[in-house]
Each structure stands twice: as C-alpha cells, then as structure tokens.
Image 1 (cartoon, rainbow, N blue to C red):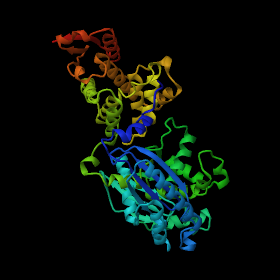
Image 2 (cartoon, one colour):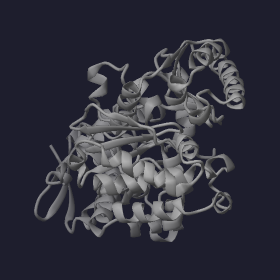
Image 3 (cartoon, one colour):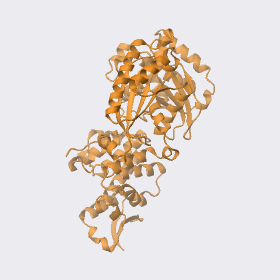
Image 4 (cartoon, one colour):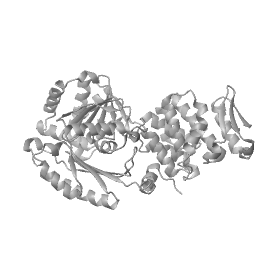
Amino acid sequence: MPAASLETARRSSAPQSAAGAAPVGVVDIGSNSVRLVIFDRLARSPVALFNEKALCGIGRNMVSTGRLDDSGVAAALTALARFREIAGALGVTRIEAVATAAVRDARNGNEFVARARDALGSQVRVLSGEDEARLSAEGVLAAIPDADGVVGDLGGGSLELSPVSNGKVSSGLTLPFGPLRLMDLSDGKIERARTLVDAALDEMQGRDKFKGKTLYAVGGVWRNIARIQMEDAEHPIRILHHYEISREEAAGFASFLAGQSRKSLESITSVTRRRAESIPYGALVMERLLKALKLDRVVISAFGVREGVLFSKLPAEERAEDPLLAACRDLAVRLGRDADLGPALDRWIAPIFADDEPRFKRLRRAASWLSDVGWRGHPDHRAEQAFLDALNAPFIGIDHPGRAQLALALYHRYGGEAVDQIKRVERIERFLSGEAREQSELLGAALRAGLSIAGPSASLLSETSLRLTSASVILTLPRSRQALIAEPVTKRLDELAKILDRQSRIETR
C-alpha cells in the first residue's frame, strides 16, 4: 500500500477521530482578500481541513472614494456564498467571521456587513484596529510561543503592529500602510509612498525598544515576498512558516522588489497577477520598518488573525500546551499502533541524552511520538517517506533547523543509509551543523533500537531499560522476557553502541 503523508492522513482522519468534536470555520474579510479556513476542531494545534481565498480587493480606491469597491464587493459576496455551501457540506456549525480595515473605515461598511451576513449565513464581526492587532499577535504566539519582538500584520488597508514577549501581547497600533491604501494615497508613485511611510514611522513612539528584536511578519503580501526570497536563496526547506531572514538580507531584497515593475513581478511564477501590484508596496513597508525600528531579523508567520480568533477561544490550560508536542501526540494517537508508545520510547532512550539541552529534549519527545506513524508505508520507502513527512508537515512551534533535525532523526529511525539517500536528505544534512547531524543520527538509532525489542508494544518496552556506562550500552530486561532477545535486537543495539563508541551488553534481572 503506498505511504500516505502525515498531512493527508491527518486530514482524512480528523473529523472521525476528534472524539465528536465538530469542525469550525473562520472567515477573514480583508481589504484585499476574503478567506475561509475550516479547522478540524478547536484545539491547540488545529488541522486545516479546507483553506481557500478569493482576491477581491474590496478596499481598492477607498481613500479617494471613501467606499468599498463595487466590483470587489460583488466578488466578496460571491466568495462568501460559496464558503457557506462548502462549510455546510463539511458539517461546520460554527463560523467565526471577522472583517478588518476596509470594512471598518468605509462609509458603506455597515451595508456590506449586512449583505455579507446574508451571503455567509453567519454574523460578521468588524474588528477595531486594536482588536485586529491583538488577534494577529495571538495567532503568532499560538505558533511561536517564545516570540520576542513585534508582530506586523500587513493587510491590504493597514499595518497592525503589536509588541510580543514572554507569551504576552502589549498594546499595539494601526498604521494606514496596506498596499492598496498606499497605492491610493500615493497615486501609484512608489517614491511618494516611501515619503508617507517614513513620515509616519518618524512619529512612532517607543521605537527604540525594538532595536535588535524580531519582526514577525504576517499577511499574504509579506508571505509572497518571503517565498520569492526563499526561491532566490535556494533554501532547502520550502515551508514559509518560521522562515527566518536576516535584517541585511530582508532589507536588501525588499528594497530590490520595491523597485520592480508589475510586469517584471508577473514574470515570477510564484506571484499571481493580483499580488504583483501589491508586492512593491509591501516590500517598501518591510524595508522602511526594519530601518526605522532597527529590527534584527524577519520571521514569517503563517498564523495570524484567523488562528488568533481560535487561540483566543481556548481555555488557559490548552493555550499553555506546547504546540509541536500537541500535534505530534495527536498524530501518534490517530496513526500509530499504540497510543502509549511515544512516552514509553522517550523514557527508554532518555539515559542516552541525559546531558542534552532543553531544545533537543523537546525534539527527542517529538521524534518519539512520531516514531511509529509511518508503519503503513512500504518497507523499502519508509525512511524517505518519514523524512519528507516530518520535513513538510504543517507543524507549528518549530523553526527550520529544528524541523530539519526532526526529519533527519526519523530518516535514521527507519534505517536510512547513504546508498538510499535522496538529494533532499543530502541538502538538509548540509543545512544542519555537524553536531545537529550527529544528534539526529544518534536519536534515530536509539528509537530504532527501542522499537526492535517489542515492536510497537509500549507495555513490553516498559519492562526493559537502557543505561549507559563509560564503556557500555546496557539493555536490561526481566528473565521472564528473555525470549525477546533475538538477532534484530542485538543488531540494533550494536549499531547504537557503535555510534556511542561503546560496546553493547544485555543483562537479565
């Protein structure tokens, strides 16, 4: 049977395996786009069952007219009617719909809200600038709990800035820097737009507190800019979430894009025609913001207002959960053969990693949870499939080096060897430091050894233990379980001991 990806399996099993929890929809009506995301349930690490946007441009020319664009409104209402049908078919009984800058500022905003409510069949909440900034920052914290800096959510009509630190959001502000609004204010002249942005940023209070911090960039235009830069840099991981760009690289590339014509941007395959006109203005805002606030780097966040809406509904104890471990646990419970295997494996291999830093211990726990979810795959391709699944899974709470290290550990857990290596594995190995590669190889070998003892049985594994001495790796098990000792066990234990430059030994008690 061909191996299914983690994401595909998660999506196919989500509604049935969520203990009766119903899917929930979030609709975000922005100045430029209207989007529906249907999540499997209200959870710490939700899975997107459906995600679709329509680039409507309801905020186009709003500065000069004071009204939402007629053609944009028609397109938005058509999209909302479609979303209503899809949500109903997927069993969504709860839709959280929000509207942002264009709707709250337009003279005909209330009229549009009424029509949108009828088209969608749900209430539409118009967010204040303060609410929009807070929810966007909540979304970033949901995905990057240790975020420290400023969340910048660039929509078509505005830029929301919210300081974040220690898991909390501070009061933010709204600036009229959305690309659609800037195009209108500047009459389509990029130099005039630069002057407007610089003047507003010069008046911004408390800029010095962001010096050396991180810009957490939210919004479709900034994601498009990051995608172009990622392709240009030939970055080995093609996941936008938690993609990091240094200040120098981000500012230089943004400055370059701000000077490009719409026609030249349309020639880039990853840029849609509707985004091409917005990108120079979004790039301009990023470049000037980095300079004015003296920020150190840019981190792209795929989570924003929509996810913030969900995160804000969770009880405090769920909000405090580790999002990566919550997702890995969820996958193991849904797709693994023994729901208790992940924690049992983590305890079993812990003596080998007793002195490792907290960051790696967290990755070790994640890898332990994921160590058995690829069992349905063809034996000849499990290593490759496990590697690609972990590398490309929609995980949050993990940066790109961590994602690469986790993927490589699972590759080794399934016995990936040099003769089997695909080019992607080789690129990831070059991306990581030598120490990180060695940690991943050791972790994979340890998981492989643990799983050789009793297969996916957590209870049998828990009757055995592993310990490390200066000369040996020692497996201890009860005399009553001596029958478990076989060639696969001794072979995997020898492999583990060799990596640790020790001898293997088996003892009974």
